[in-house]
Image (tube, rainbow over all chains, first blue to last red):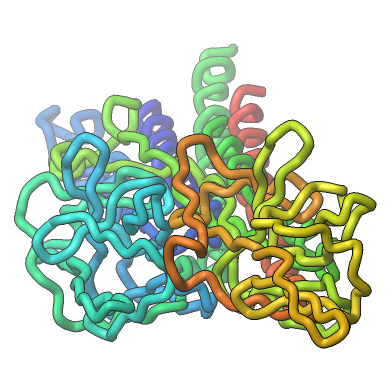
Length: 251
Length: 260
């Protein structure tokens, strides 16, 4: 019976984490290039259950297997394409298809982003919204110096003088290995990026978040109700325990 | 639970910021030379799931799963897309058809940029804006000794007066530009202040600042329809985040009821 208390408690903890995840998705419903995450839960491993008390010869009698709770198995990022919103700003670029823009963090490491709301810094270099430099195919920063430039579908910036620079758009074999840095950026712990080819870069557009409010609200209801069920289970176990402790022994 | 309440709150704060900027854009839908601003968002740092008493599989532990903690507003971005030029026929109403800005200096030597070209001539014959700040130009002669209708300002800023069939060059209006328009700070009065150390280019050195159009004013570049649509979306997103807060609140209530 006490075992049941803990089973329900693991359910409540996991649901709480699910709600944390849903609330983060909802919080980023307007974040450019945001990719929603899903928390995947799994039952505890099966354990053998045996019973001694009702056995005629007093030996352990196996009565089958049982799972004693639920735990977090994975947090999966859904890299589904977000809608493209037209902004008419020449510095806004969206990737339609696979791949990420490559940027350089202040500490020199590389990071990857789907948020193409770029700016120019005081030296006319292309930067991400947080000031990180956007890199070209040779991993150099891109000096444009003007907002009067064209971007072709393959991510080549054509400057007024005819100079061409191609944005470094890369993808990864295992997208789930990317981890998030915040500020719309991803980093990779292991595994090198490979050039992406299934994409079109659109200038004057921004990719919107791929969070679907309807899905998330349904999940929210599901989580709140499952949580309530777990709470009821704990309460009824508590009542049963109360009876066992206080009433059975009463003469 | 406390964290979830906080996650929802971060986003509501960010939405509030966007709503403020939308309200400001709508208020300036008729302001000469106004440039609309917009707020974009970014996600906050991700928090490790491990070591917080959360039951998880061995693989999950090794992969160091992370859950986000909300969103926030990025720096304000301003759209320097040109506004529509409206014809006024006034001699000293100037609009820039291109990327540049007019320069203004106040009495204390402060330097500002503006796209609002509704100028006038003061008693001393100098070209000023509506606040009395001087328009940066190479002045050769006071403007006040000529009638307004005799003064022409050419596309490259050359101010000439025609009196009794004789053309007199009175000065040349300068245009300015900065590479990083994001570094300009709006200080009100349709003016932008330039951050210290930012290089300001002038059209006397290089080309590509645009053409001055006399008798026109640049209207605000705010697109009212877009602003109203954004307003609706922002309001909905705000409401949506109250839902996750309410859900967290209800669940916390259930936890509190566990022990009666």
